[in-house]
Figure 1 (cartoon, rainbow, N blue to C red):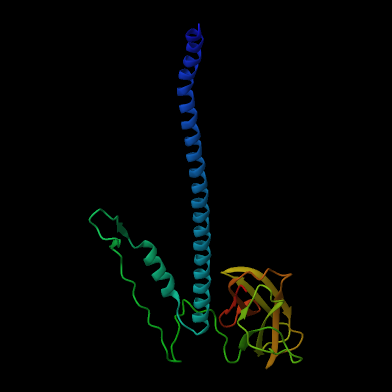
Figure 2: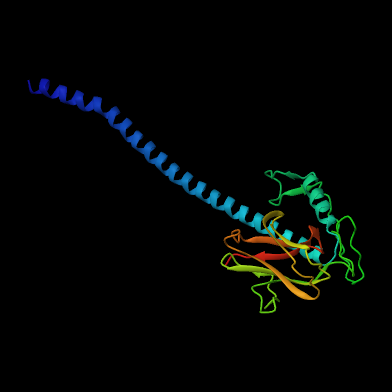
Length: 253
């Protein structure tokens, strides 16, 4: 009788062994899945951080390129070659050979077109291309001289400093110029751009003729947010640009 009573108990123990094994395997698999999820989360976060950093660097490069281009325009240099070279880079066929078991670790880059080196004129007599230059003021017609960016003006309406770099926390940004041969009734205006897009426009009508006096415009945070990047401002008389846009930078703190 004792043997008969023990037999069912042994049978029960034997039948529960596969169940316990399956449960153990399930718990192990569950732990592996949790580890994979944690690893994937970390990898995804790293990828997002890398993408954000790359996007920020691309934006910085674009801003620096635009600031350089506006600066070259201000010096009277033909900048048409910049877009030409950028187009050549974008259209150049590039093939990267994938590394094999016997290949070196350095990727083999082939079929890359060389970029021509642009030589800028260093003499003051350099004449910019007419296609790249805006209408220029004549000696007898309206004109602006000593156009500068500043943080403010004095009692004579002239710049208190020369400041081509501002920050997102700046309160006001001024453009100041000496005006000559401006007849009474002429409309003087300023167009403010960030990365080629107009963000502000102001104008006033000259009550009297202006010859040798300072004129100025300014923008503040109520006109447009001072977003970091390359900016420019263009002065006009009767909607005709006199000279080239003046470049300035808004840099993050």
